[in-house]
Image 1: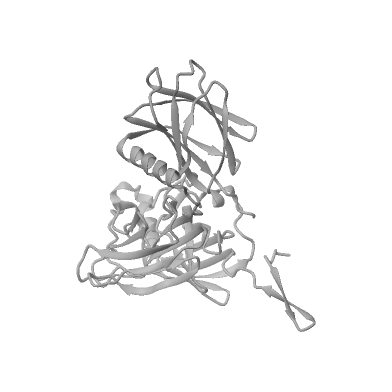
Image 2: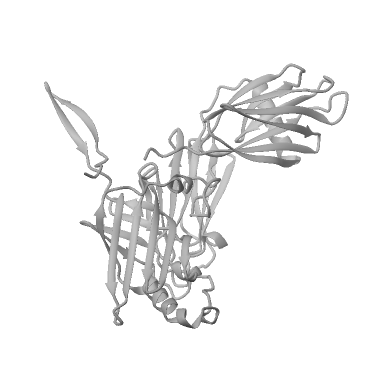
Length: 432
């Protein structure tokens, strides 16, 4: 019997308890479509949808079969409303036999629209998508007709998938797709942002003056801007974040008069500024861009702490920062051990973690000092900044990163022109 993914809430009504069951996620499961062409050859499409992150980001596996061709692709789907999943532009090929169809998968775009037990493809039409497709001349003669039929099918064929079961796609790959450090390709999810300011503004810019491009913005499952046309008079708007992780989805609703969509979303939170841009190569002809924005808790700061924070931020900005390693952590909390294994010569360093000053003015001693660091899902960046050069230049220290039973050591070598940095990636595993 298939698992129903039910959770329950209890309401007190007078003296009675009323149990209300939350319905199972309608999108999770396996969906299938079949059609025979005029030559009695079968088109077969299967979509396996995994359990989502925050009921918004759905890793999925798409299988397309026709004649001698089989293609298996990872892609990300994003919930746009209760009955729509936006289809990611990038279909990462896990398997393509006996040939690759390359950018022919891009026109299979737009949304999956739910009606009853069917998902229908509602494409964003366009005559061009900004990417060259493989020329037929590169294919073997016996494959050319199949390539033509598959490309036409993906671009134009009405596809309505029927639900086969409610079993989620279960694979380690599903969880890996949700983090930029572990995903095999770019799926429309950009590196996480870390901010301190709860309230921010979103504004827009457009490359083409009168293109009729329309976009929507959703944050934490709330549609805050729905189908707005982008032009020079489009007003900015205030948005508010929740503490912790926020998922912001920027949707291209159409490709305008001159495809594809060329809108840019400008985000401002205090001094922090970011941009989500449909004109970049990785986002061209995409239907969405997703950003995870972490609102860090504001701490009460003494005047001295505020000055120290400003000083360190300026040193990070003005100096070059050398990345000495990128590692993956299995624990959400790691321990940094820092000491001087040579002559204790008065070296002092400061640390900055995800734009947050963790500890200013740390004196490097012979005896190790230990700092516990809680990691956020995704990429975490720790920067080591020299406060001075001690009596013996440069400023050196030994760093050991303790991740459960695993340990890894580095030599930190900084001066007044160069910082060192370590990137630690942490993957929050989905509960499948």
